[in-house]
Length: 479
View (cartoon, rainbow, N blue to C red):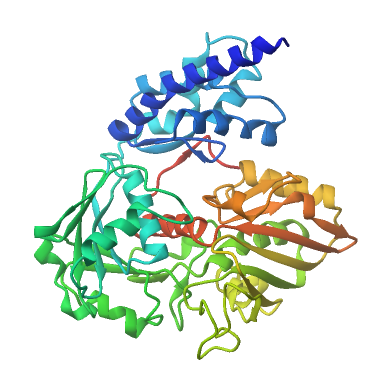
């Protein structure tokens, strides 16, 4: 290929990606159809992000996929009368172009592949959401809800609840949403309505409610009804404490973004979300580590069987540690988080059993907090019921990341250059590092990266959708 051809091909990809972008917005805002590409988000993606998403195809299928190949499908999708759903245009395009050389049969192909969506009468019913607590997870959930807002998406962020603030508090809350040292600037516009104590983000009016305890709030005063209260504080983790939210006018259900205690259902979306019933009023989304490891452990257990194992997490420091040495009620956590590796305990390994009961009593775990602000790794040392090679194990997990019901939770990388900062912003619960996989006879060691903030927030959002009855089908159907 001549040097000039490389630039020409790139410019062609840019042109096609620029044509794709408004069609994605049209499908999402007008029809509630979210277009993804091998699990990668495309709605609100930049031209360059769309091109980069197409490069993922080679990792999964071994074949190149260009915007020129997906553009005809997306154009056709925009013409169809589709009900709200999620469509993986990458998988559809790969399946179509491997058997066809032109667009002649494209309409028939899509009519067949999407027949259920074409014949569906599903509609969107708006549901109110309140974020109780506006720390790391609260602000990321706000970003995700704002990103997805539109006529086709039912979850509406109506309010955030924080403790009573001093002069300038509202502006500081807005600034923390606008700027993030780890995840970068907010993608859009944020303004403050000081007179009504509200933040307006990309046109979304978000009421800021100042309260020191749940019983101080009447959500109906703000026009909020039958709301899902997402408790990001971690102050209450049992039914008695979290039930305080249900005593508020306008509140209907509660989701805890931390491991629940007692009889609260701990849900790892993709693994056991089916346990959520319409009658459930309090649910836990478990922990970031439990969400990262459970889908991978389920996949391995389904094929190879797990006899026993140990999970060691190398975890970024968190807000409950001290920046410099000072008193802390927890062992070792009083030592400077920015200067030390800190050995601590984790309940994540045992918590796996709440989502995956067949592994009850089979796993132990510890954690090492390290001086990085985000992205962690779980090292799973497993004893299997059957033998496995690294090659077979990686091939299986790569397939799980592509076409299984766990593809939204498991990602896979074969890069020899990936480091923790490359995982920032990953929307998957965990990313298997295939290069690091070790397997011999019936033993294996798996290395699983995870963005303990953003990846976990995406899992929380899925739980929110499940609790509020938002159950979009994905096409093509996962195996």
